[in-house]
Image (cartoon, rainbow, N blue to C red):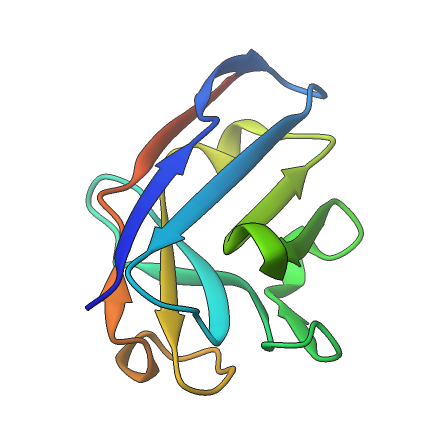
Length: 120
C-alpha cells in the first residue's frame, strides 16, 4: 500500500507561482503523475515523471509553465507551476503507478487532492 499526501495548494493571482508536493509513504514509488479536476469537468492529465526522472510528459496547455520533478530520497514528487492562469483552477491530485503514463487508469494510488485557485 502507498499513501499519498498532497500539499502546497492555495489561492493566488494570475501570473503567480505555486509548488505542489506529493509525499508518499508505505514503499518506494515508481512513476508519479499529477492530474486535475475542475467542477463539471472530467479529471485531466497534467504531468508525469518516470521513476528515475528521465522521462516526463506534460499536457499541452501547461508546457513551458509547469515542471514536474521528484526527490527519490524523500519519496516525494513536486509540481512547480509558474505563470498561473484562471483556467488552471482545479483540485490537483497526485498519483503513483508502476510505469509512467498519461492515462489515469495506469495509476494505482491516489492522493486526496489539493485545491488550486487562480484569480484574474
